Length: 323
Image (cartoon, rainbow, N blue to C red):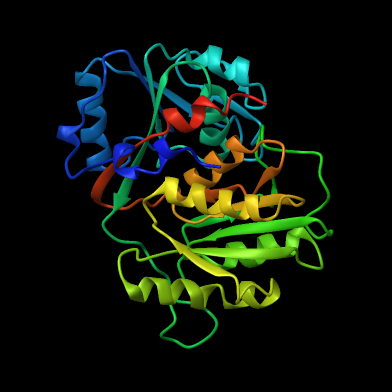
């Protein structure tokens, strides 16, 4: 169960409209990816963080096909993301750690959260919400049905470092799949096929309200094949696209409602929603597993940022140390 102190989300979420209003302790380490300064807004945020004396560490995979390791830009050190002690020692946060969800891939920031759990430092997750999403015309279906595609390719469904469990395959009885779905229908379709046949019993979660009701309708349209193949049309729910704690509670409810099931969580939605999925798995390490397609994001990035969100996940991680 989620403790009462986590139910008041306003305590754990801060929204900013300008990077110059960002305030961080001087003993903060910012963990980011190589794309940290790709846009003007991100550059301003970096300048603001450095003006406050924050230390910055850039993490990246040594190769596009290796999701198990990360390299630190400052030293060239390669760390095993499956070893929380090695990862924690490498980043050595003293008072506060900030994880940039936009520039880091989930395959890096999820193990990093796991490594920081229960260590006594304050942990914040930073999300920069774009003003709009890029869309490309769908090659199938009605011409008025656009399809969003943010990723160049995916390496295929496989566990995330530190989140793999010895459990039945997703297609076997005794499992439940909770799929967090965004706007990219193709990713979910391919991932479901890779999980095996028949599809596991599935609960689909969409972002709502998002920017507009039209986006919700587009998301459902994009996932029509997924909903049919997984027979999950009757089990659709909705969560805020910028509230990871709401998503965490929703997944926790599914876990509590199925005490005899091994729960697979598929984070293919917004970054805050994916953060909620990771937090839920960290709170239930023996009964959950992250299944992710390890997608490679396109080089193109949003030109501007609508707002900045800072999520304080310290309380959630307090009881979710390395398992």
